[in-house]
Length: 320
Image (tube, rainbow, N blue to C red; front, side):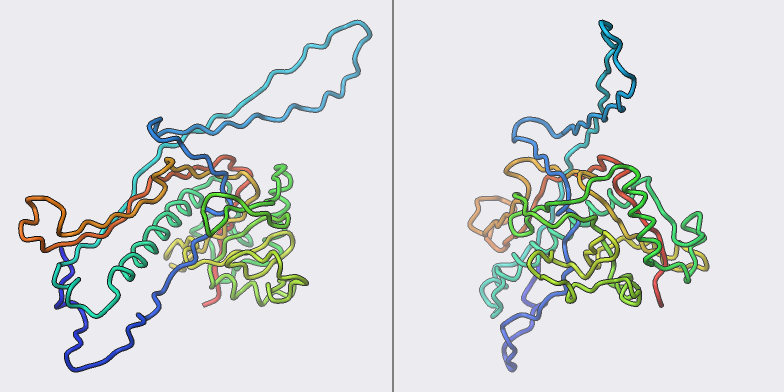
């Protein structure tokens, strides 16, 4: 359905600031720490990731003149299929002509935010479906997480130990949030994605170091709020919440903590994100009087978990 002039604020007897009100935007973070492998155009919609297992230590001494049995490589192949996402807004020619708003700029901004938010949540949901789970305190399942079982320094230390036991490498680079393509270095760490409600609880822990207390602000990452033990936390309102899934119907929050190469992201080259504007001048019988514009976006995108052992989902409660 086309957006029309009747749905806009008119300028007949009133004045308002044409700098449009700032829109509420979630911080888009979930794709930043992925292994990025794009598919060349005109190739396939399926991409495979391959991991070779490490060899065990060869602790048996060699026997003089005897060739040892040797070892065999072991590999794990993981495939994922690209999916397409997109949306558009339809407007009328009268709206484009008569409104006093910088409409095209606003529509592009709104649609751009929607595209980023969509891909962020798609990536988050794949990550949050992982099989490596740590329930807070003494909980053994999501359903028995109580309101007292919050994220704490003890939980974070347990998470770090679990990741280290699995030989998880720390993250030393991230996808550049500006370009979405190249990488930039970060100081070696594990990364945790937290909701603002979780940050509220972490700030009460004396072991939590707020980002403003870092000795240097040089490598602070976008959205970073602080660190605890060996984990640096990125805050986002897109953090996964399992609504009414805990004991007594409380919400259970999922804080995802990971190391390097835990998950991958793939796009089709040239189609990672495209925008489209169709004007009334386009020759089509569906708009004989040139009355409609459309503004839209489309993206080819996929996320997959590459190593379940290198990503941990901590399920916990938050303060009311």
